[in-house]
Length: 334
Ligand code: P6P
Image 1: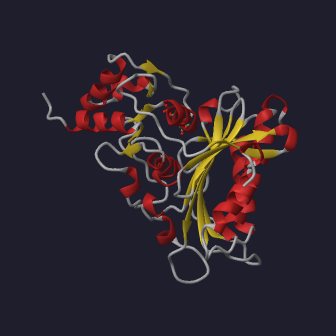
Image 2: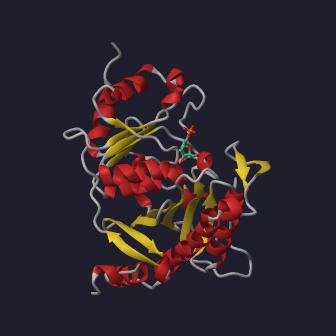
């Protein structure tokens, strides 16, 4: 086994592949395709001020949100790689209303993938961390092409989940069900090198070294229970940190401990974040790192989506902090 500084993600995946006797290499190829796509997205993100992709397109996506040219670029680029790479039979992305199938002349694979091509819309163009979230499930339907049943599986059916964050460093974080690993991109050698292994999310309550994240700008739209959770952490001496990009807020809590809350509010009665391609992937990572993610009362990973773009409230982070939030939410009204 090479020493850690030479453990690039390709070698890591080959080592993991050898642990699965029936592995064919298709999953490894798929993950390397996703990584290649994210490296190409990062190139445009890194030169945003000089990029030709600096504006909103004028279109409104299925989320009823403005579409940014960089969103479109990331989406088109990743869809091209993932639908023509021979490892998938369908892709669901935040930007497309329906499942994106594999073009007729291309080989179908046994995996379905969900992506949020560029998470952190409000931070695009202001040089704040944004990133790509991905998740892989095995096809369960009959036939070569995917259908809704392949995607509307609970989060526990994921075989892989991860994100690539475009920040001061480009980092890749993922799990394949055997712990959480972080790889940091080294420009000089054009490689993702292992930087953290078997990441464990620290508890928050005992030493308060972590932080609390929520968009408290919605305070007047929250119900009393959501306010009670926020009050517990805001009055409890915990740091408040909110970046506005889900993966950036989550990454901080993954490494330092903390809790990210996006409760339902009167503007977003089901919460804002999407279950299939935002919450399920990061909840898989959270639980693999010893953390927890709930919708307020149930583990996110147990939720079976009813639709591709279904939203859910979320409390995700250190296990002790999420359990505390669940207790507050379950307490009888005073
Ligand atoms: P709000 C970014 O658009 C995003 O999807 C997440 O990355 C982020 O956590 C959330 O929305 C922020 O939403 O309503 O606070 O601007």
